[in-house]
Picture 1: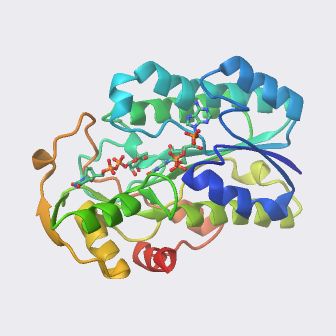
Picture 2: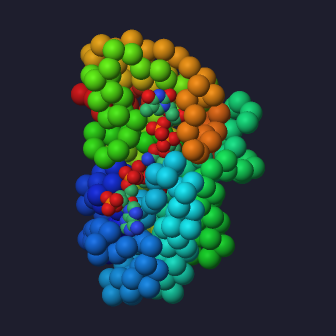
Length: 285
Ligand SMILES: NC(=O)C1=CN([C@@H]2O[C@H](COP(=O)(O)OP(=O)(O)OC[C@H]3O[C@@H](n4cnc5c(N)ncnc54)[C@H](OP(=O)(O)O)[C@@H]3O)[C@@H](O)[C@H]2O)C=CC1
Ligand SMILES: Cc1cn([C@H]2C[C@H](O)[C@@H](COP(=O)(O)OP(=O)(O)O[C@H]3O[C@@H](C)C(=O)[C@@H](O)[C@H]3O)O2)c(=O)[nH]c1=O
């Protein structure tokens, strides 16, 4: 199988480049080869590679910056995936795409299932939701995997930011009223590969039975403050932590208060997902 992989310099893309190896020929394209803000280039690359599967972790992920660059965020997160879906459909290929817990408004507690009402609070979330909707409407065989609070040992993420800040400062003030599930980039990549391999082993392409939207995040839940406490425990870095409210940490983009994803659909059909605390331990080790 010929697989076109975008975003291989990103957290999830980097892990996917490794995880997908056993499944076929992986052709990884970075921004230099395929800039998602250039839709003609997106179409040209897909037409010349002619993949059987496109895996698209590339995205505009700067949540606050997106508030002042809504058009660019929309082009990369919605129009480029729409173009990928159209090209994949024309080729008879399938598309694996990633989305976010920030499609939810998070106003009430409780884990969200795939069919729950969405209502993004910020430009990033709205652009990712538009990408999901364009793919679903295109009729291409697809998996849309919604994940949350991604971290890993490379790239820009909360784990690495907190490790750096905790070494630099005596005290960190961290929001303790936003609830979610931190998810290791490797969990996302390995789970994606497992889904694709399981389906192939069944002798029937996964999209014949299982095309659609799935939540893929660690089990359990915490707050950004709880995540930071765990990071300090695992890394042994010493720093005083002060829990604060969202109001005490103003940012350009509002974040959902409760965005825990219910992953039962994926776990019932495919694979068990790890607890967030255990995954963090493995990642740090
Ligand atoms: N990070 C998170 O906390 C979460 C992420 N997600 C979703 O998961 C997926 C993977 O995210 P993650 O790996 O964390 O993202 P990263 O921010 O780590 O990586 C983003 C990737 O997209 C690439 N990219 C950005 N703009 C363009 C462009 N114009 N053309 C081509 N490539 C571009 C980046 O390339 P470059 O290195 O050149 O900038 C990079 O490879 C995304 O769909 C994201 O929305 C969902 C929930 C949480
Ligand atoms: C650095 C810092 C952040 N915070 C708060 C701000 C914010 O409410 C929360 C998270 O901050 P960040 O800006 O690092 O995370 P953020 O960019 O909001 O992370 C999101 O990224 C996108 C791509 C997603 O899809 C989401 O799932 C989610 O992971 O932590 C503190 O309270 N204290 C601090 O010192």
